[in-house]
Amino acid sequence: MSMSYRWPILRRLWFRERTLAYTQHVLSVVDELTTRGVGFRSLTEGLHTDGPMGKAMLTIMAAFAQLERDTMIERTRAGLAAAAANGRKGGRPRKVDDADAAKARKLRDKGIAATDIAKMLGVSRATVYRYLSDGVPLSA
Image (cartoon, rainbow, N blue to C red; front, side):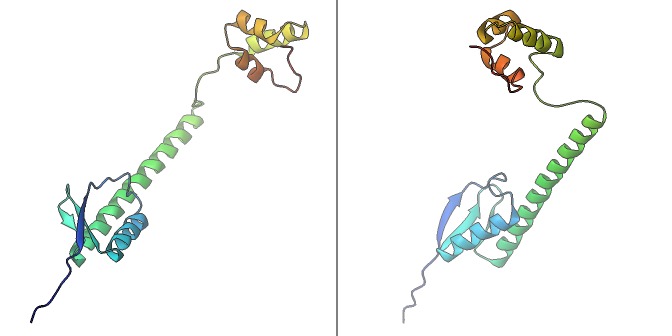
């Protein structure tokens, strides 16, 4: 009597924390693979999802990866809030300060073209338009 047993196909995947950062995503990917008859084996951690212990370990690893990600986001937000409380502002520094913006407005009021204002201030024409976009179109 011969019994035929079909072994599940085992694909080798490189486990990446960034790809499988969310616990629910990890479990849904593993369930999808299992329904297709494909086993999951992590080459770096040496675990596989053929048995219940492998699935449990994968769930625990995914939970810790999500915890690490959430902690990193929380720390980043706290750092940004602390910087804001100290008067620091993130982002790229302004290209044109308030004095240059006022100078550009006066030049625009005199009828000087945006291209010429940009050359005088040493910035691009788009920067002039951005800083002077108060509803009054600049002459081109």
